[in-house]
Length: 117
View (cartoon, rainbow, N blue to C red):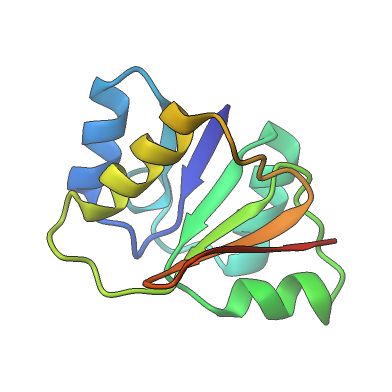
């Protein structure tokens, strides 16, 4: 499983996931000025699941037809600290119960919802 963190994911979370051996790249570190559509195109090309706090990805998927095959994880909650996103992803990966492929996965205080595409 490979991930691509959008620029609103703290670098501390990216580094924590990398230290755990999780394959994740960061827009903040690699290309902070690229557009959301460019992010999706890179994610498609590299087969990476996008992690974001940006609700615009739902619109890109369902209105404009972008379909990142490895999926999008939309964190719809306030981070408790810079490592909070890493903790969420680490728990999901460790549980091995959720597939992100071809789905918008929304994580909020009520749980996890997925909308396939």
